Length: 434
Image 1 (cartoon, rainbow, N blue to C red):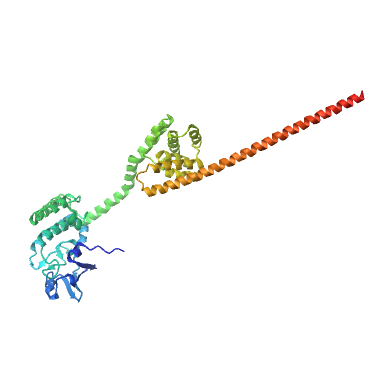
Image 2 (cartoon, rainbow, N blue to C red; image 1 turned 90 degrees about the horizontal axis):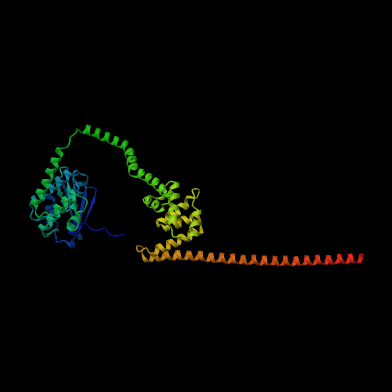
């Protein structure tokens, strides 16, 4: 199992952050930080009195546990807020950053390090302490970039904070996020957020405000009506865009079929699967594909005899898939029909298709070609064996017929000799009687 990828916050601090219920814990390895004594960071307990903080230091690690009051929510909860609330949070965050005045405490601005209360006021979980805890120094350029990426992630969650922070120049950003990430200073950023809030407020004034009870009744009534209308709307949509054009195509293809314009039948029905066609249309499309198939006249005539309106629909499906170039599917159908000639023809078509398929991986293509070639070879052996047996039977039959003819000839000669003998005896008797 792969290890969990560290978050941006953990990478910057070289620490591990965990959250259990509403309790956050930061674990630092002592060898990686400059802190010597826990007293150096005792001031962290006084930064936000709404948080319970516990600092524990052992030989190997420093553990800082923070437990905010229940009114605070993690940054991810912003996704469920309305648009105006997200921009209010952004405005509050900018003010919080501007008002930060502790010279020894350094901000690390990212979603994992921010929670907010019911008034949408943000609070930072961790602060860097100069010469003691990372971030050891204040980096205004990096902090401003973090601020913009955090605000962009707050108002537009289609990308993550890290994507905004690292990849904003190459990502396809929405208009607001794009403007945020290309703003050059805090004042301009603040003005942009204020402008968005003003726009939202103006828009809200144009909306009709209903009392909560009336709004609830209206909402559920609308939902009820919509639920009742959905089946009718679906049926209307389906009929207009699918059923009606399909029926028109079936009628039109029938006219072309009666005119023996088989190519037009194929063109008219090219958007429809055989499963969606009535049996008579299946018969017409199968016949049209078969007529256009490159077969010998005798072979085509024999195949056409297998396609009538009383035929098994699988025959229609076979020639439909052959005509559409779905030779693998045609092969599956031919196996169901257990028609030797159809199986062989589908195998030959599938083999030709594989040879020209440049999208198939070389090893997979060769594997499939070998299977087809082996099966065709088996059929050839069976065919040769059947022909040999038929030839042997023919020879035996001819031998039997020759033997019978010879026997018949001998019998005939014997009969003639007997007859001649009797005639001679009769003549002798007549001579004696004279």
